[in-house]
Length: 70
Image (cartoon, rainbow, N blue to C red):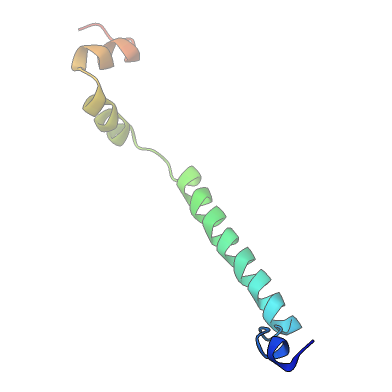
């Protein structure tokens, strides 16, 4: 190879740099999974549930889904 071709190569990363990149990726994945875990463990309150359902349904539809007679 010519000297010019050698000069255009990027420097190689060290083993420590590659390892740290892998650790950073794993840490990001763990943080994402922890966030999902918290969402799943967070209890949903009945009031919040009814408010969300009422936003997309009429009162009659909501009562029918709950098995209530109005």
